Length: 283
Image (cartoon, rainbow, N blue to C red; front, side, top):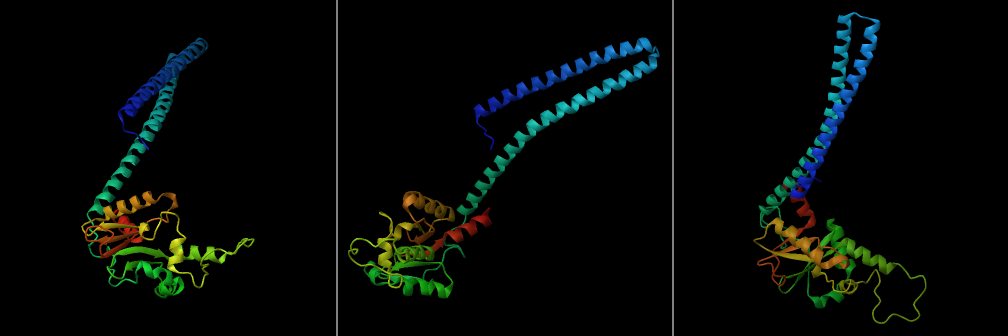
């Protein structure tokens, strides 16, 4: 991608100056050399054949051909060099304009606009308290309802206040259950302390305890106020991903609350799929 900084432009001007001198100098030497060789050859030929008109015609055609050949060579070199740089500059400008246009259009779309956020009052969801996690079996509370609807994710809300506790993705459940199903090569020397969940009876609490240190179901979602735009949603999602680092599961969901506080009741839900859809349309 072309740079437009002052140092780059100065360097580019210097390189073009060197190229111009090289091309023109080479052209001059080629023309001069060709004329000298042609003159000598014609002089020798003239002594043998003194017809002046024929000599002039041949010399004229020879010079015209040499000039056309050198001109084509100079034009091809300069056109290649400058056209390549112009193409890179135009490509960079187009990409910059596309990015600005997309961000500007995302900034014009409110999260409360029609067909942007999911209405949580009618969405498939789990309404629980943290104290319910250990009694909520994944197979019955999440896998079966999602399979029946053909969904791949399901939000969890606080049943007492409507706050967002997280979004459980089918891929996260499957990954956890696969780990439970895989038997170790050799049995541990002594039984593991506490509960040992199985694929059939694993609970939301078991899954939550298996997450990397510092990661919770709620930390995998971001929160924005109801006055936010889709550009704010995009920034919040990226910021949550950056804060989790490599140990996180990735933020793919944003909850909308009155002021953006995670303790407030959720009024809307925006997925990364909806964000990509709107971003593609804006672009």
